[in-house]
Image (cartoon, rainbow, N blue to C red; front, side):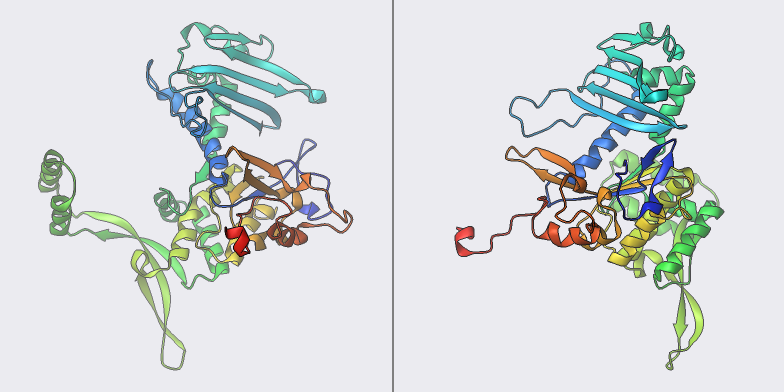
Length: 413
């Protein structure tokens, strides 16, 4: 996410105490090249950091090791991230297995861009800087092997450690075309007036076909609910408990559901009325996806956080994909410096990106994925090179990270 000195789109580069940062980056590559795994690694790091506080001694850590190395299935995984927090730059990382934290470290960049160790851990031993990480002093003795030191110190009210945990909490992810973020977006549309207004304005600009989107509380038919429970795969005990709870409960049962407001036309094509549609039944899959993503998108923009999206372009028209990215690339809609990291296959988006926003993933002969930047390639005409030429060159195979497609009978043989 660090910008390179390039002539294109200088207005999108964000200056943070002299550090030049990008608001978004796109990752391209063939299917099964490792694009999703690159994002999953960030998600796994977040999961370990936020979940370690709830582990009891002896509990297993979330662990998903590399599967294609015959003798390395249980080798430690190493994860590290370099990030800004209140205009200070930190480098934090750890190595771990299913059962224990093998190593952990935290550094800060001081004036002059020198790096100062805050703490470094090997197994159960922690070396702590008295000057830079006083909040960690005296906590080493209560550390357990499956617990991150930074999460322990945060739980004991360490101010910097709590802010580091908060940074990870403000790093959101959307996986593929599924994910459980629809409820979050629906809650935003129902309860957060400010963000809901921004989302509705975006939907209007995207011309999704509806005039408005609303959340209404719909009454649930008890008999229909009983039938759903009885036909479910739940155990008999759980079914009996749910049905008993229904019998003793009083009042109407309701649940929030989305409705979209559409214009109704006469035979001459004139709008004569408006009608509420059942969102789930009548809206397109593309509309459902952009509405579902709206919560994470506008929450991240509001908080100035990081949003990681796998397959941003799935089920979306290229113009709509560009509009989502433009929310982050435009300083007017992104005044707090939020960042978007996403994978996609739509090469037309390259024409709207700087070269340093474009990344590729490719597997080597051992099926190990490598992530590399477009700017690592020398341009034949550096003065006139830009991302507009990258799409054609990428499809010609100049940057790798494309599927091999045989073109001749001999190739196929």
